[in-house]
Amino acid sequence: MSDVITVHVPTPSRTYDVIVGSGILDSLGDRVASTCHPDAVLVVTDSNVGPLYLQRVVTSLEKAGLRTATLTIPAGEQYKRLVTFGAILEAAAQASLTRDGVIVALGGGVVGDMAGFAAASYMRGIEVVQVPTTLLAMVDSSVGGKTAIDLESGKNLVGAFLQPSLVLADVACLATLQPDVFVDGIGEIVKHGILADAKLFDELAEHPLTQYSDASYLARIVARNVEIKRDVVSTDEKERGLRQTLNLGHTIGHAVEAASGFTLGHGHCVAIGLCCVARAAEALGWAEDGLSSRIESCITAQGLPIDTTIASDDIIKYATHDKKRHGDVVNLVIPSTIGGVGIRLVSLDDFRHIVCLGCGVTR
Figure (cartoon, rainbow, N blue to C red):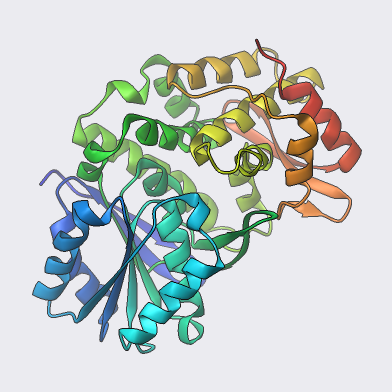
């Protein structure tokens, strides 16, 4: 077991720890028992992650004296829907979870979002423990308390805020990821660098994360990203102001993701969104000269895309169903420098112009 990094996350609704390290998965049972004191646990995982880690998690929980039930859902964003959400709730009831029960989310962002939303809804709210197994989930979705499911009209349109009671990120799990799934997580890491850490951005630009497999290095990168998100979420838990900056690249990115039928990974779509909004911002004089090329170079170095062939009309259609729309305006996060962003309220006509300036323009 490597050195363990603990990031303390204080929010108005709950204060919790994010534990990052390598080889720490087997400590989950003792940590859940001492943190949550549950009467029973439901572990929710998916068909990709379950065969790899479910038995280890169950063994750890049972060794800690916790009555444990499991549910394995189909893997994939296309299953992040009401029917699967209902199945999790039914499994919680069948496992006889009470208000003192805990749902453990073992997997990537889809599992974390769905299990978290189920925990927020079951008996009007029980505790959830996030055990992210993908890089994307470790640096983003497992922290901050956003939980949701998708509708036909768009991504994450139904959900709730529920801060986890504990997050345990074992970077040893990253070794079993397919290369494209690992790369997908880097999109959010680049976003965090643009948002708040020019040193992190420069480090990624010079030394792409795909070149590293050292557990200690990966743990440091994950922990740094958690700190960046922590600093935002602890100030603005319910996304009333500052937390909206975490949506950098997401308005266009979510639209690309939905328009692709969720065949493109979230991190890939965020990377596209980052480049598109940077190109438009620079063209409109809202960003420093050369910013878009710096972002494009960094993202290309990670093996991520910088543009989309999806029609602008389709991007606009899905973006206008996004949560970031308010009446006839869209909240758009605009990068001005590396390490500096702002929020602009843009009209739907101006948003259309931004999409046309930034999307589908590279060769």
